Length: 207
Image (cartoon, rainbow, N blue to C red; front, side, top):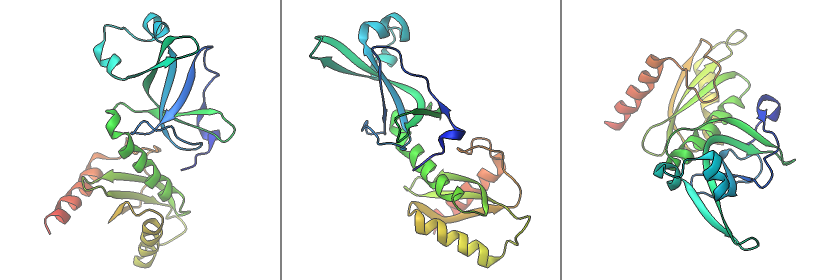
């Protein structure tokens, strides 16, 4: 999954003695242009003095401890709530915030991949993917309809494009003629439109 770094915020150089990595939900380090959670590593005493309250057990549960054999000091990785990715040139780009449990990060990344696939189609202005609970996703799509007509043939063409490039999506696509608020994660999509998708998913489950 690639991103245009011009539309994202590039982070500053990390503080001395700090390392940064980007991980997925299984805590694997990701390659360039792969979206994931940003983690920072420092000597534990530095975290205790500034970044976190060592009495906070919730914060401590999110740490991975490592021993740096060169200095014989305990260093730790702090899993932040920030989402980002490294570019091919090594720049770290900030994408947004993620406040759900770590185990849900893979679900979020899958959504980003599907939404990126949607936006790759030239007639689509906005796309929103929704998990259905079956490992598949439904999609809400807003089209550029000023210069084209939303015919059944066009809908089928777009559907084929989406399913060809991403097998993680159900045959549930809701097309709307109005522009959706600009949001890559679809956080501000109208409540009733989301409920419509949920109802379609529930109906599908009954058969």
